[in-house]
Length: 294
Image 1 (cartoon, helix red, strand yellow):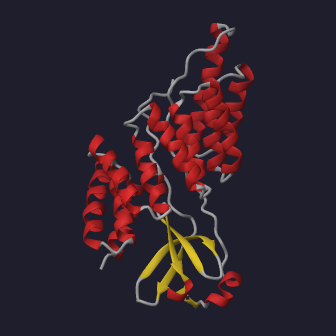
Image 2 (cartoon, rainbow, N blue to C red):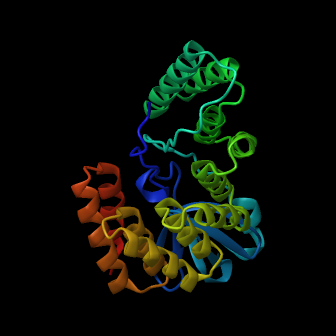
């Protein structure tokens, strides 16, 4: 059985962009991240989980190529983020199902465990096959649908994952991790209103859920509600002062707003905590940001 201590680390701690552009602003500032939306007037750049808007009138060049608003829509290619989702995955066992023999329950759980192991190894197709085996034995296994949701989102098929998370919720209406899964998928899809909706549902069920509090910080920052973002990040820190992803989230937010001293303070705290947790990926991402600070 997978222990509840396998924590789902959102955003910075669990994935980094595969594609990145270097955007030079006319004020001399350089911004690096994924262009997740473009029009003939503005671009949105994903800066480690926060979508920041820049009007093209303020943009000098992208990857060394001069950009003008009139031709930007044709010249820019939107590069969807490929997600290295989770070497770890939350798992909170749901109530045992009826009408199954002890042998069937054991077999379903063994298949689910194999799926989790493959998932942690990033062998997502094999994970999907094991989750489906578990569901063939027990069609009402909420955990199986939950696992499929994350596996498909890991394959950059987050639209498809929504149905699996929804099925898990239907089978187990108080399944906190499934609501977080829905919110996570919507965040990757850039549907921030739905992201916020499902994270708030999580908090109705478990008010101190760090994933939801941290996720709300990113989501509110993505829609420009920066004070709300700061408030949720700080709520997470109040609950657990050792939660590294929240400090990294605050660092990115302050960096994006040009508040570099606050950004540095939070980046350094995040780096120390990532080191403490032997999270090399997190440390590397923070060091890249520290190197950009003036």
